[in-house]
View 1 (cartoon, rainbow, N blue to C red):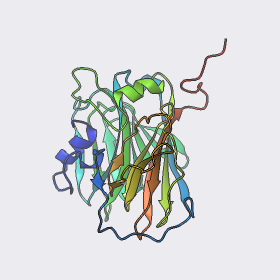
View 2: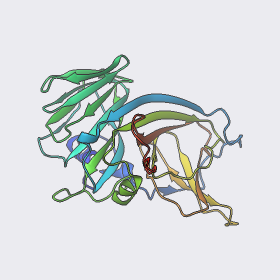
View 3: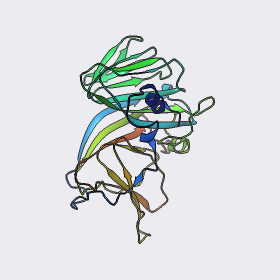
View 4: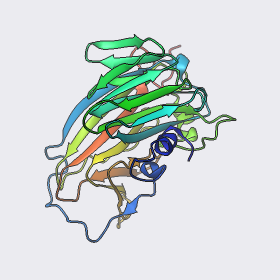
Amino acid sequence: MTHRAFVVLLTITTLAGVPGAGHAQDATPVSTETSLATPASPVAEITTEILARISLPAAAIPPPPAIVDVWLWTLNPGQEMAFADGELPPSIAADVLLSGEVTVQSAGRMQVQRAQGVEEATPGTDVALRAGEAVIYVDNQAAQTVRNTGDSSARAISFGVFSTAPPSSLADGPLSTEDWERSGLAGHDLVVTVERLTVPPGASLPVFVPDVHAPRIFAVAEGVVQSALVSDDTATPARPVSFRRDDVIWFRTLDPGVQRRLRNDVDRPLELLQLTIDVAPSEPAAGATPPP
């Protein structure tokens, strides 16, 4: 898979894991050796924290065909990742720093989001980021670097909309070209909400039907989550699939009557990162009928 996350893992050769490992939809089946948690109420004590709301301007979002990619990455102290000008296809991307400190630089248009708001960065200058802050690469094809300038590991969740039109080598992602087109989100100003969900042992998120007009993509920050498809018409539910740290659960349009369930079945807390992509509040909702 040739996307921005793949390039990151190739560039930083000391990072653990293999290229694209955090993006595999076919994750590890549930192990019989997993330490099971004591059953809890399905929504017991689940906490939700909004980490960031990132605005993506319509003018910077590549037209279909395109995919949405989501990945987690870590830089150790002194490590750096870099991208040459034109190395990535037409795209817009963002990093939300979860921990540590980094310095970022871009030769193109870049925005920095802090508690006090969003500011434009001067091209070619270093900008320091701390946990809870974000950077938006409005011109994601421009040369850029990210360097860990702190004394501890820096960890972030990243996402972006990437063109799959030739000569791009991209083909698929957590939100596929087909679902991106069906979503009706292209051509709109968008807001991506990044939330941290802490799920105690034995608890699960309420079952849900994925909405292609406001897709949610989940990434595992810590712990193990069991993902299962459930249906009232099936006496025996499908075997759950296990997703672990750094895995991304791809968006999937389900058949009528089928829902997705995410559950923590081990004896330690689960930390999920949930990204929800929606039309900006001032815009009409995707898929909505325009007024007469």
